[in-house]
Amino acid sequence: MTAALPPTALRSVLTALMLAIFLGALDQTIVAVSMPAISAQFNDVGLLAWVISGYMVAMTVAVPIYGKLGDLYGRRRMILTGISLFTLASIACALAQDMQQLVLARVLQGIGAGGMVSVSQAIIGDFVPPRERGRYQGYFSSMYAVASVAGPVLGGWLTEYLSWRWVFWINLPLGLVALWAIRRALAGMPVQRRQARVDYLGAVLLIVGLGSLLLGITLVGQGQAWTAPAVLTLFGCAVLGLGLFVGHEWRCTEPLLPLGLFGNKVAVLCWVVIFFASFQSISLTMLMPLRFQGITGAGADSAALHLLPLAMGLPLGAFTGGRMTSRTGRFKPQILAGAVLMPLAICAMAMTPPQAWLSAVFMLLTGIACGLQFPTSLVGTQSAVASQDIGVATSTTNLFRSLGGAMGVACMSSLLLGLLHQGGFELLGNPLLGSLKAGEADPVTQMRLLETFRHLLLGSAAIALLGLLAALVLPDRQLRGR
Image (tube, rainbow, N blue to C red; front, side, top):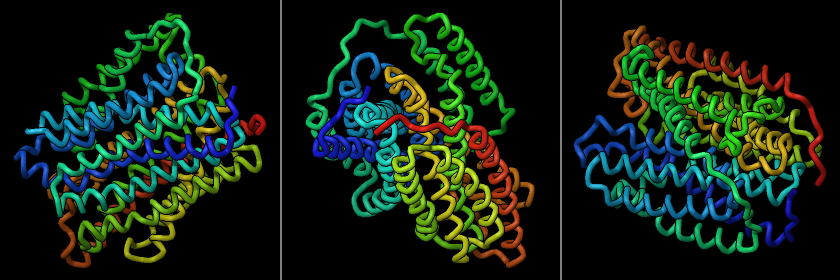
């Protein structure tokens, strides 16, 4: 059951939760532009990629655990725990004296961020009826988009004029403000007090399974072959860990992740939709600057600005989809519209040179397509499950969103590496950290590079058809009341 709140109190809760989500999402992107400075100070390139990957992997694994603990012991306690851990870990990042310390602190920071993001979205499910949730989840998706734009700009400014350590020090005042705002806004939130056993064994098995899977995917995205011994070992550990997790959850009286949720057709199809939407949005965020920089010879700052249409389309689509869901009481039309628009926009982008204004239009449409699917898929999931499972269903939705992004980066960067090597192009370092040596190439070479990215984007559009298939078979149901 949802608890009714006066409009003023609801706005206060919403503002506090949006600040927490912004803070967690900001640290996914703010560090990227500081990587060269971090590498230069510590003189360590081997662990550099794990400064970002460690955060993402820890955040993804922590999401379902926070969801279950929030259902058992109250979401207010869990989100305050997440913010506190995130803020303390940010201080540890700023004080790190070598790369190993920084990576470890980033992992702890990711664990805290997992609670901030997943529990925030579950709290909205406690206070807002299903028919109204689309509008508020649209606000949350807008926070993701704002963070994706503000992160690189703010990180670049802090690194250039102060130090890369200020990329983490800035989280201290922001974290303290978020902690104060959440405590104040949720002071009257009812706390569940019931005896329950925490599924610690399930948590360990899930950490081993998902952690191994995401670490293997990350290694592939950093240039290692799918058949490399380290990758195969991690995938083997993932299969074993997840297999044991599933067997254990079936027998557990208080499971961490109720497997009965996977018998819910609406929830499962919404998870598939959000997986492929995240696959596209995160992988395109990585691919588009490389495409623009390699073909036009522009600098990194211009390449980052090239992402603005995509970042602008995300909140526009999320806001529109949320409003339409609230107005009509249905979520499938918005999801289906985004799923149809996605492959069409990516195909059109593949056929358009990156420097043309039409390319920006198609990027905007791609962002709108993603935005239409993110909040509405979450609303559909929350509406399809029982009220006591809203927390774990929300965290599972975020889990599939994170998995989609990780898979998108790994698969598309691996495919990009293969196509570039096949075409005889040289790379300056890792494709996720470096840039293509084609800025001053002859027109024939630039045409070959344009063709390479065209094939890559067409492959991305083909993958988007899987999300469209899930949207087509998704049941069209009326959301419960206002």
